[in-house]
Amino acid sequence: MEATCNEFKSALRKGLGRAMILLRNSKHCAELQDILLHACIVNQVYDRQSEEERAHYLYQLIVETGKVESYREKLFQTLRSDEENVGKIDKAQIFTILSCMAAAGFDEDRRALRDFLMTTDYYRIGCNCSPSISLGRSPRVWGVG
Image 1 (cartoon, rainbow, N blue to C red):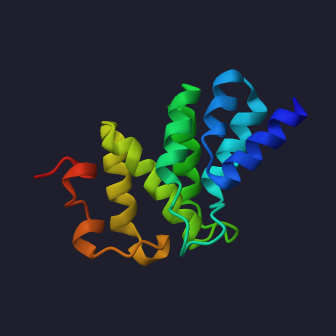
Image 2: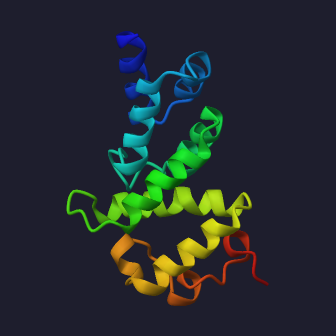
């Protein structure tokens, strides 16, 4: 199992599809789910100028676990925290993962994300978006329009 965990960590760090295969073969492995949660909370992109963000990729892995609710709760908890070890880049990734969940139809996610943005400076999460987008005028995420 240690080899699988190391392969999974490596695949996540590199953004490879192999992570999905490993997860499918060991869906109920708590260790892999802990590694996935850590990758969701700590942005592992090496070079942000040449690599794309991984939020959508991580969201697909979360869905594959079948434990979206559990991840949602932990990610919201981290997003709302003021822990200094969670940086802007990490918060932006968490926010984007939660936005994917909101786009999938979780109404309470939409409300919670909107509330988060209303009570915080949107620059805090590292998003380069205008206040109008941050306040929920994007039809894809907020269902408005």
